[in-house]
Image (tube, rainbow over all chains, first blue to last red; front, side, top):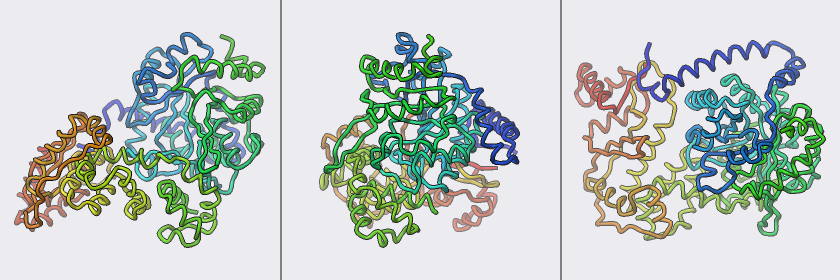
Length: 338
Length: 273
């Protein structure tokens, strides 16, 4: 049997990577022990995560974030303030690939994580062979510590221009199971851990508190969590909750990565709206959440300050406050040894 | 529980403020076209209704993506309308059906625009064909055994005879690159339509070949038989089905095989094993 034009979208290297991913999938299925009981399964991530690398404090980027020469250059950060630029979280849409800034970082052998920007984890149709193959090829070249990304609706309907948006997931138990299925699919395809992130949003639908939802996603998927303190602060404010409401639902030992970012307040017809805009203006509610969880996240491996479109000068005060929060934590003591 | 349906409902409400008002005033009656449970309908009206319009630039951003692919059509239409008025697309039944059916927002905009501005129809048809060819390039085909189908970078449309020439003139009039064209449109540039052709003018078929590397669409005229065959092969067909189709053109099995081989050599179709 031979393929003609149908396989032309995959270059030979990519086809080999995909075959390698299938092999990795087989090995991962075996190591997961799919016939095990839920108790055994739920503890397996906590064992597996011990092997995850410690990345420290890093910065995020996405395609074209530094195209106009402004913004926080990760290379400059890593050189001038290495304690803040220990890894790069690279936001990826497979249709765009990597930009020069990301390639330059990777060419220096520096650590990174892969933050997907284009997959609806709860939709099996979204895991088409082309997308999977592209992700496998990218991860093979990037060698990220893990995959992560907002668990929500990245695009409505098709994955194409104009359809991109980011909506929160439907906060229901059924939805949590669908997201867990997607996480398992992606983990099996890439051989890498996949950490869901609580997304930003203004409209949340469903019957669960978002902390409970993600706790269930992690349990069903046997995975860890990327907890975004800024996104969570916005959620709490929308619902009139105190910043730490519902956080007891989260197993703090499942938090592998955390995000901190700034936000702006606007008004829509008298309604106060907090916009997640990645400025250096980090809300006090975000710091409250971050401080509470960072003290308790015993398996925390990475923290990102999302400020990619701001100057280094504007970001440094935020980094300093971050280190103040972390100074007495095991994470902080490990990350700030530089 | 149908997570997809409630997601579709949410997307439509984010784009259409008038729908938000209808949903909040009559939540039980607002979704005749979506199978939503009582619980899901209640979820949709729980947020403060002002939160559905927290991103007032959403329509404008999406429209800008759309008009990048309809520069000539929009340029012609802007003589009678405005970029703000074109945002009405997002409140149309065509857009709502597009979201419900996981359609292409860009392609469906063309369908809507044809209803609003029939004078630009030929160019809308042309630009829709280019948009389809561009998307087929990116879409993964399902597996079929031993089938023939149109190459993903190809599409075919039927337009009036001098549409292609006019289209190229209009396009260059807007600018040499997509960026220049969109900037011209956003700056208020409009295009002047020439004499309109009547329905009596016989249409010609244009084969569109989209080059992903250069982002250029090459177009060439084709006869009606070729156009019909390519349209037939939009979805994969077995050789037997193609032969049955080709009988309409008095082609036997050998002639059909020869034509398929020639089209494959020209990279218009390909065979899946």
